[in-house]
Amino acid sequence: MKKPKSLNAIGLSLAIFGALLLTPDTLFMRLSELDGFSMLVWRGGLSGIAYLFIWIWFSLRTEQKIPNAFTLNFGIIVICQMLNATLFSLAIAVAPVTVVLIGVSTAPVFAAILSRLILGEVLSKLTIATAVLVVVGLYISILGQDVTSTKFSGSTLQGAGLGLGVAFALAMNFTLIRKDKDVPFVLAIAIGAFLAAGLGALCAEVLYWPQATNLAAIALTGIIILPVSFVTLSYAARFVPSSTVSLIMLLETVLGPLWVWWGIGEIPTNSMLIGGAIVVICLTGFLINQGRHNYVNKS
Image (cartoon, rainbow, N blue to C red; front, side, top):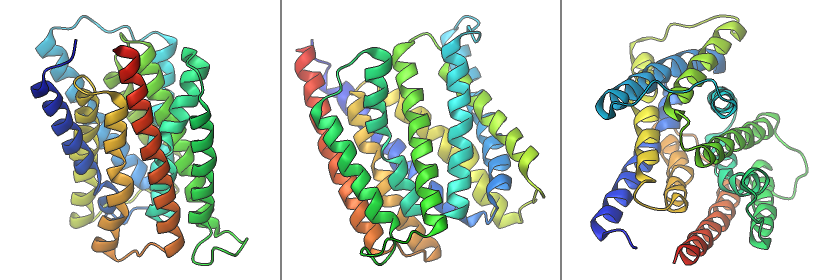
């Protein structure tokens, strides 16, 4: 039985709203002018508070029972969220935004591989081919302006690696949330965000108190952009396939660097744009194929 067109329209609208809201996230992170660990403390702490309030609000409205937080899946999601928040903040602080977002955009490929390992789903030839092409795109993007050079910029290579780590953590989260329908994942994400903030506080040599404009920037991304966008995107998956939501989320990879370019003048190199285009095109084809495959199986 197909869902009413109105519900599909609601799901698509929510997904597009969430993805568009997420696109300027990296710009405001840069505008905060914080180093990696200070950014982690502020962003993790503020988003953790926001996630916790969102979870409490939804729990009260739906009259949910006390969640079972003493499960393996819950613990893994907490750890993955801590890694996700930590690696992303450190990556944005040290590397070009374009490269970091390209690395993060590989999450669908990691999700397919983890679904095979954890859920027993078949790993298709298309998935393998997509993974290879994505690696090629990443290789091109991290070379810098000279695509014939074999020398990598240290910060660029580090940003690509951290971005891949974020993609893996996100993919693991999505896979476990798909596997365990009862896991209170919003609460797990909140705890993971708080742990990331604590880790930042322990590792930082000096914790900076941002000036008014910088504080406004990090508060905007921590309290509004990050939690609202991810909750909206998650809720959209109730109305449209998750592959569609993932596809729409690629808007961040495309528009995020443009926001940073417009806001602070960080111009992506030609090789970053070429590599990013390869990644986005490959992932778009991959997700469209996955969506069609899922639709045929349900029919």
